[in-house]
Amino acid sequence: MIQSVEIESILLKGDRMSYSDIQRLLELDVKKEKICRALGIGEENEDLYEDMDFSTADKFYETYTFVLDEIEKREEERNPKKKWEEIAVQNGIEIPTFRARVSKGMDYETAATKPVKKGIPKHIRELARKNGIRYNTVYHRIKEKGMDPIEAATKKTPRQLKNGA
Image (cartoon, rainbow, N blue to C red; front, side, top):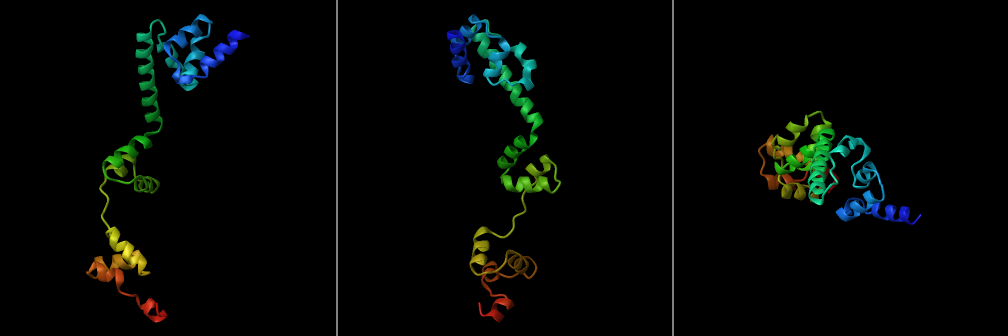
């Protein structure tokens, strides 16, 4: 009874277990698999249990580091989106932009590396919003009509003039 309480309290430390904790578990005949699961090496990676070497502290930390690296690689292979989101951010592409591109059918690599077309500057968009002018109207005025951005963001639309806005 006392041993099972001791075992459970050590296992609850999870990946914060020290090598001396692991030695004690081994002395109490706790199976390697149970220790590995407590360390966060889930059943989906049980093939890595055999790579864990508990014979010395140095070997334990060396093999544990290897196993954690391997788990990280597997996660990236299972979920490449996370890796490509990081690449997108490094390329100055915001995550919502990256995700929108992917949801519209763009592959991860292109979505994370294709430069973002620069639209209307933020201060002009905010000025237009304050004046009740839609982004599409401002964009059309600047890109299609060649209007000055400030004028495009402040000139009332015919509908606003008619309604007295």
